[in-house]
Structure formats: C-alpha cells, structure tokens
Amino acid sequence: MVAAVAPFVDTSISKTVNVPADYPYADFQGLYFTAWKSALKGLATYRPNAVLGAVLSVDAAASTPPQLVAVDGANQRLRVERLPAPVLASLRWPSRPDFPGGNPAWSYMIQYPHGEFSLFVGELPAEASPESGLFARNLPFEVWVNGAEQPRGFAAMAKTLSMDMRANDPAWLRLKLDALATVSEERSFEMPMPPHGEPRLFPGVVAATAAVIRWRCEQLGALQEGGPTPVIDAMFSRDEPRTGTSGTLAWAVDVSNPASGEAFSVTLKEVQLPAGDGGFVTRPCAIGFSGNYPRALDGLARLLSLDMRVLDPAWVGMKLRKLLNVGEPLGHFMAPVPGERRQQLWPSTVAYIARLVIHRYAMLGVLDAAGFPLNAMGILQTPADKQRPGASAPIAGARCPECANPTLIHKDGCEFCTTCGYIGACG
Image 1 (tube, rainbow, N blue to C red):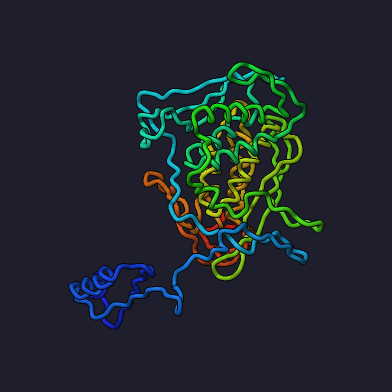
Image 2 (tube, rainbow, N blue to C red):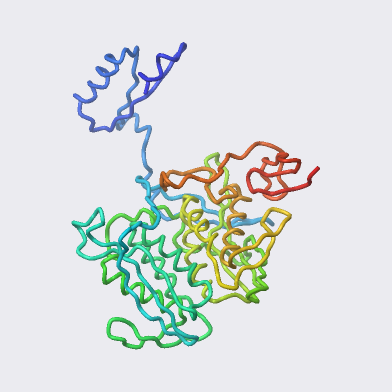
C-alpha cells in the first residue's frame, strides 16, 4: 500500500503492519526486505506482547448476549448497550438458482378447515451443488404454494422463507421454522403428516405448513446440527426485546385495503443500538398487526421480526425489497405513497406493508427510500449483478419534518428529502 501511494506523496506517509505474536522471524524480517526493494524509506511494524498488549484485538465479552436496559423518561425506548461481534466472513445471499433444464421439487397437499392447497419445496440437485461431494441428497432452496384455497398472505411468507433456505445457515432455518410452529389462529385442526399420514393437531395452517417443511428439510439433511452460523452470530437479539411495566415507544400506521375489506394497524417495536460515534441509533426489532387482517400474516410477521434483529440492515432490506412486487388476484388497491402527497396502485396488502416498513427505516436513517442500507456493515456481500437502481447518497440540506435528518433540498421546484423521500412545499 505504501509503495503504491508514496510516489504521489510529497510530505510524509505512514503505514503500520500488524503481525500476530507468533509471527515467524523469517517472515518478519522479510517485511523490511520487501519494503527496501520497494524503495521505501521506512516501515512501521507492531507485534503484540504481554507488556504493550495488542492494537487489534477481539474482546471475549463481545460474544456474550447483548444486554437490554430500561430507558427512563417520556421518550423511552428499549436500549441495547453492547452489540455482538460481527461475523468474520461475508454472508452470501444469492438469488434463486437458474436451471435451464428445470429442477426437482417435492410436493404435499396441505388440508385445513377452509380448503386445501399444494406446498412445493424446490430442491437443488446434489450434482449441481459446489458441495456435491458432501451431500448425497438434494438441497432445499425454495418453497412456494399453489391453489385457489391458499390463505391470503401465504405466498409472501413462502417467498421470505425461501431466502432463509439459501442462507447456508441450518440453525437460522431451524429458528425460523420454530417461530412459525407456534403461530395460533382461530381454531386448531388435525392434518395428516408425512410419511404415513398420521393425524397431528396444529394451532393453525401456518404451523401445519411449517411442520411439513421441517419434515422435508430433515429428510434432506438441511437442518443438521453444528457448522457455521453466520446469520445467528449477526443478531443483536435472538429473542424479541421485552419492555418493562412502563412500556416503550413504537411506530404504528393504519392500513386499509377496500378491495379485500381489510383495515388494521402495523406496529413496529423499536430498540436503540450503539452507534459508532458513541451515541445510539434506533432500529425496529419486531413487527405486529392488529385489527381485521389475514391471520396468515402473523407468520410473515414472525419471519420479518427475526430478520429485523440481524445486525446488518442489508439483510432485512433485502427481504423487504423482495416483497414489493408480491401480487394478489383482486387484491390491488390505491393508497398513499409513504412520505409523498400522492397515491398509487399497490399490487397487494403485503407489498404496501413492505413499502411502509422501508419508509420507517428511511425515516430512521438506516435504509434509503429504495430499501438499501445507507451504511454497509460488511456482514452481507451484495451480489455483483444486483446493483442498487438509481442509488444516490443523501445530500446535506435543511432538517426534514418527516425523518428529522438534515437532508431536505429543493428538487424540481419542490422540497425533497434525500434520506426518506419526503416531498414538501413546491414553488
């Protein structure tokens, strides 16, 4: 690095090479020899020892669970004082594999009190997997449902769970299926379970579907114990943070879909996380619904709540962007665009919920209006072919009345916030 930059520096330059305590002497000596061959006039090295300590180190306490403390005052929120150490390797989240010749899929008929529908688990052929020498069976990589009698909102839940199957973290997939297994609905029912059709009692269709998916994943060996857990390690809280008796602040918005007769509220519970400047940043940690809404959306809420507690906001941003194009027959409706004084046609209730949540993240300065993180944390690695469309960095300006960030500028004759997309007075 110094050899590349030094010819263009006319005053001074410094670079310290940190080496471990057990670094071989021959290699240590070779650092200076390489610097001399590169025509450098000096080189700084540092080897940790018991007297001086280490410049770069990992605190053993950083791997302990984060501590939640109560925050007093009128504007109280849950607060996390310590964050987990970030994972060392980037987590890959590629899109759906492309098979020109098709791919196998396992199917099962889900039978519940209001009808039946087909469940499909798409599988990655072992011979097409980079780890084909380690697996003798296919690997599940997606799940979807089909049928006119499927519960509303089930397609969005399946799409979200499919991305978890491609996370290369069996413990994370088990955590997601555990969360779905306890979703209760109006009444319980019995459903035959594979492989022999024994009846089993379930609290709802979400829990029944999750049990079938778990059975198939176990048959394929996709839920094995052990191995790396990159997503689990990147969570700032595995369980939902709990409030005290005095409660805490949350963000809520009403949703009304006249096409489907739904009217309910979306609530985001929020928590304060330590920021790099010594302060705190507010992040949603759970989502819930109340009112007249499809009960299958409770399953989607369980999945998204876990996604929100992954330290890198790029993870939940990816999940929310995938939901923006979820359509529903006869479920499209007109609704206001979050942060703007206009309305547009939305393909489904789920798509509108995803846009509302992205808008809240943008108000907090965590994601931009398109759902991409403003500050990448390096835990996730964005695929090279998935460039952010029309992305631009926030521009300094006046304080925005919507998100309170100092990024309100004049664009096309109107006030425009480059953080949350708010449009104010024009003229």
